[in-house]
Image (cartoon, rainbow, N blue to C red; front, side, top):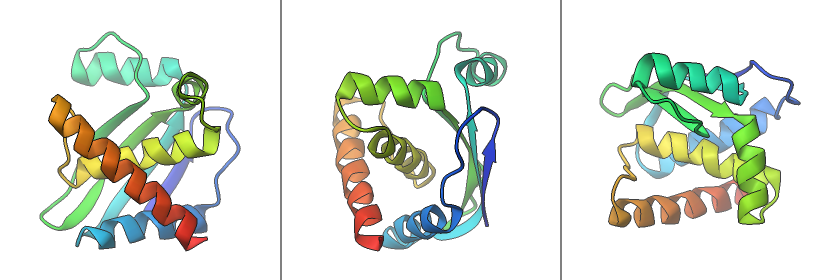
Length: 139
């Protein structure tokens, strides 16, 4: 089950369309859906989580908590809408594209992809682009 929660003033996304896309991402990597929560929030909300649970005192666009068991993917994915808007502006892409990139990024972390090294980051970016293209195919 996928739930979309809104802790900030943000227009809800089409839950059915986005859920189908997320499930297709999981299936493309041979995983299945468990319980997945997307929480859309603002910078202050995500900063508090970053400070409390990760001991980081910085803004971030996403924090993912992994509750997966084997091939069954579950977790909480917190996304700062403010960071997504700023990223879209900085990277000269539209908001929807950046939101999809961040949403896919969280899923990819749950699937085991990392982004701490340059090599890992390159693989992550390639996978993000691959998964964003799947959204457009699904429509």
